[in-house]
Length: 339
Image (cartoon, rainbow, N blue to C red; front, side, top):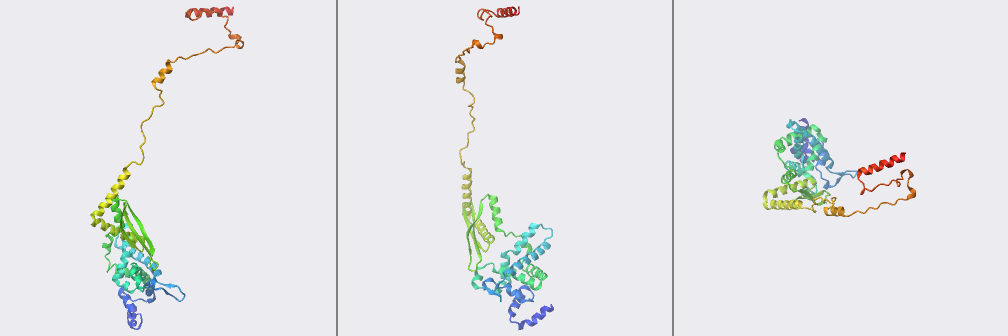
């Protein structure tokens, strides 16, 4: 309090009196080192340089402020929702520090009016206010420390300007809502990059379109892929809600796609098995009835084995002798040899 009182007494004698008063209305206290805050409000389009020729802008403070903002908001959300799971806490913090929220805060608090930039850049860059808000948090950290940042966020922002409970339970992820709708209705969805370019200040600009089945839907532009896809998703959801003919077109495309998927793409193979391993009966009968000729192989008399020469045995043929007579003749021949 004493330091603030001293600062108030000295203010009329400083040439930065208006900036001090404006910052007091924004952050709730007077700066110690005004240079941090001047830098936080300086956009790169101004092209200021220091004595060594290095560019002066708020990009480095923006980086620092982004980290401090995540830490302070995470701390507050953690204490505000005891017992909630990590996913809920992360989602809530993301909603509170997302670019759209910071842009609105910068406009409502008057930060956007304090930014030093070229008029052309200011009218085009929709993220300029949110970036300056983060840089301002970085300036507070360098000027007064972490506790001052916590006090600014907890009392000034979440205490007066944002209903943390309403934000936590409000669904603002239009991309997730559109994906969920498509999954429930079995609609194929994709994002198509229409254009990627840079504006006159070198900022990247993306334009994406939502494609449902083969129907190109709404388009969205932004300074990041996420921002442009969110906008395209939001506009597509609004069309699905307000335009019945648009829904009919999407579902007609789905019907056409599913119809094509159901049509056969090639001839289905035959399931009949040919029994070609079985020989037809007609061929079998002809093979059986056909006479088979057999010739006795010629025997060379010189090559006969003398021990098995039976040429001296004279017996009747089978046509002339019965079985008993053949056996008797063989026995008589055997006995005669033994004698």
